[in-house]
Amino acid sequence: MPRAYTVATAALALGVSAKWIDNALSHHTVKGVVQQRQGIPRRITIDGLLILSIALQLTAELGSTLANALYLSHQLVANGGRLQPLHGLKIELDLETFRNQLLSRLEHAVEVAPLPKRGRPSKNTTGRLE
Image 1 (cartoon, rainbow, N blue to C red):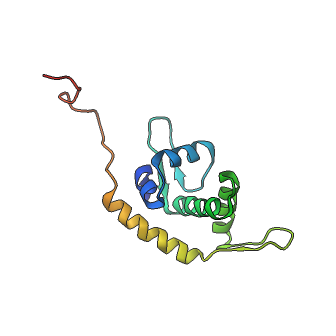
Image 2 (image 1 turned 135 degrees about the vertical axis):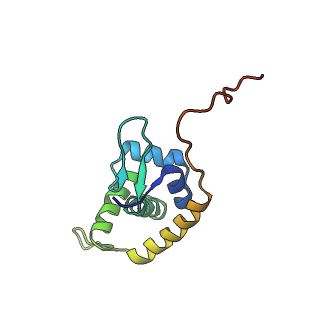
Image 3 (image 1 turned 30 degrees about the vertical axis):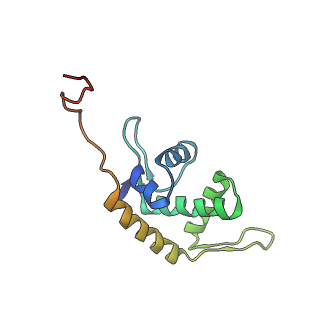
């Protein structure tokens, strides 16, 4: 299984809030997102991050809806950065450069992202004044 990152790390790498990513993943299916049952945090692979990053760029640059941007992102990644639907329109993306920029941002995000706490909280952190 490829390495997967937390939503917090992904949010830092993409420059959006963790809530935005959670909302996007709740409403849309993105290849590369490891999602299990309720209560288990989502994990996002490099491919999932790449698709989300391209979708963010498409929404910002073209004003596309997120659903359309995610569809185009999936197609661009699957076709090596080239997409030529009907009617002569051609979309081309330097996928390698885009991926390298994402990896650079991700490297920084991994260093500064908070680590998720595991297990039950200790007894002395109930919030009571003693």
